[in-house]
Length: 266
Image (cartoon, rainbow, N blue to C red; front, side):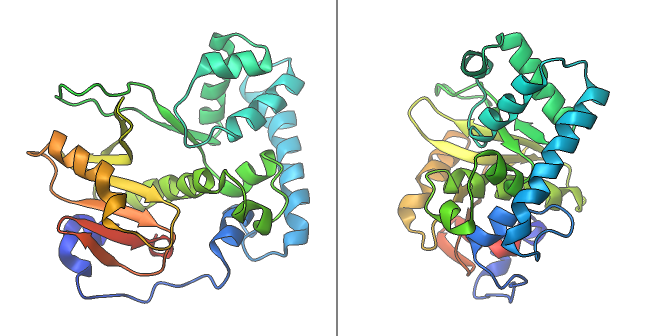
């Protein structure tokens, strides 16, 4: 990612060796990135996360916040896990669990303070287009998301309707970690228009915008750059290049100003 931000054309004509993981994307996401878990057998993953939840809810939450409704909080994190990569709606979360929107918002803040959750604000900029002002939220570990959603195996994840949401969760977290290791200090947003165009990540670096979309497909086409094209047309003076981060294995240029970056690259 840093190489791309330094020079977007660096990958033209190149396909660097990037593989460090010899299993499938579904296996990678289902295991998650908790310390020491990635290469462990599937059979221990469920018990690992079961113990993790007991420790997190039973000990950490008692320390961080005065929450008496621990059963409700356990349901809360499962509901929110099913909403990872979506816009945040505290009222909806509250209705599902039976708590007030203010309580839902407070519990989301606790998730954030306890390093389980991140939120991206909406990029509005200077435009006449009607754009969403809601934040999007992501859990910080995909294995934890799969456990909370009762996804029992990598095979079950691969066929799950939530596969793309889990993939987006992985990508956003890794993008943020990559950026923390560079000398770039961007403000990070998402962008959604009322017409349906979505850019998952927008990096604002020195008043230059870099849109990044995350698509869980192994082969991309020009069609997959439509949202980024719309973003570029909306902010032409600030935006020149875009990235589509995808589930394939190769770098390549999709269009004149858009590059495909494979999942293993990050």
